[in-house]
Length: 113
Length: 109
Length: 235
Image 1 (cartoon, rainbow over the protein chains, first blue to last red):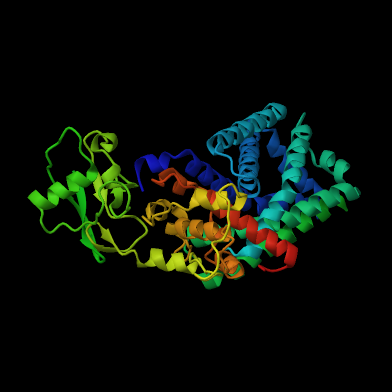
Image 2 (cartoon, rainbow over the protein chains, first blue to last red):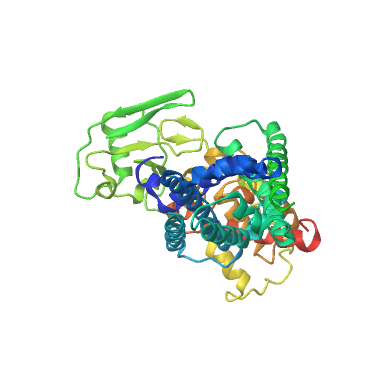
């Protein structure tokens, strides 16, 4: 389908939810591996963590926090849709979820730099 | 493709993770202030049963949640044949649980 | 404007020049083409006043009732493209094969199972009864398949029962005269059932009768989940 359908906000919200989930799922094994270095090789973990001093890496971390927040708040919207009585304000909730996500992510970035 | 049991597992793991994710992000915002070092992380988590329980639960829930989420993507977007869905779901779940469990053990013990 | 011509094996868009009129629906335009330019064009319509749902087609990429779509409302610059409904096999040109749509209707147990006979008294159900209100909100479906065509999950998952079938199942689960509650709950929580819905809400965006299949499907999810959690099975 084309045109207006592709720009439908709730459809875009679903796409964001799916893409953020996929990105997080792909990131997780790397995350677990790096943390697992603390088991036998704490020095290597520290070397890895030195990368986090670079601003570009901090930005990447902020993007990860953004993805996690988008998936969390978008997911809460879906749980509310499925388990609470229907609300006609679905687009508003999607917008709020996006806004909160950026708020949290920017908060993280300001804390990191 | 997604029946009742998988749906409930997905939603239950989501409910469980909502507070865990909020806690994790809050911890991260706190932890990244003034740089991040291994000793800072380990000083906080080593020997702590609370952190062990927190992240242990998190790993369990995310293993279930991500496995089922990837199942949906594999079928709907990648058109994976139906007979591969269960093996994929189990494999993803096990890999995440094992790697995650190892990571929790690494920072707690 | 362009109209999709072809059959189950394939096809493409053909261009036609149609005189623009003051007040013109897309169905008017398709009819003009068949009557003046292309007598072999195949399409469906019946009531032409927005009651039967037969004239549903894709108009500039969106599923609509063509008899209730004014050309000037959907004209995208000079672009007007008409195609057969998405997610359904094509028979010829703008006519699709609705068999799978109705198979899924019965597959979701969207069939009323009576528990009384003509000799019994009429069931005294008040219009204010909460369950009846839930059923009434969803019951005006005329099986036009616009929601089925709008649904991305139907596109991605051939076994998904779809919004219309599940919406009807919801009305029947709220009908206290019906005798197939358990059977229907099993049907809608099966592999191709309500749990595949990702709540994109395209169905309610496009339903010409302002129905809300997403809400109905969420209701079915709740019915099925609570039944399972209470009894360890779907009743």
